[in-house]
Length: 158
Image 1 (cartoon, rainbow, N blue to C red):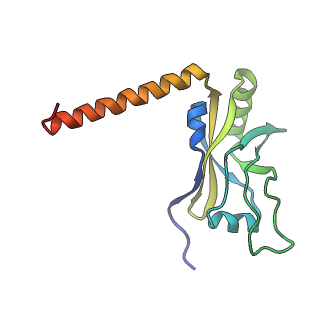
Image 2: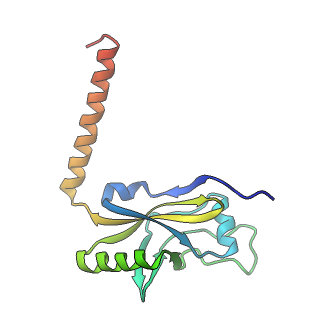
């Protein structure tokens, strides 16, 4: 059987970019059991409440919901168990320092297959205030309106 190549997104956390200011991103592997991978290949997962923590020098992904595999037997996995993330030691130490000193959080942005392995895009993030969210929405609306105006000008309309 040929090896898988490429990048296939399973699920992305679109709400994270709205609620958090992303400062830095990391790519991490996940320690999974077989039925979890089969369920992910079917495209079933939810990052809605997921977050990561650093405990005893290891990074753990919590509240990631991977539903039980439909055709699984007694070997099926728990849907919301804690999953260990695989990062380099230097990256883990950097994350420990940033989360302890600055009060930053670790938020998963997306879950995807990369060359047949499940990866997580993990962000070092700072929570946004309500006024920051309003400013972002106003900026986005202004940008959209400018694009419309440019489009109309190119077409010869006002």
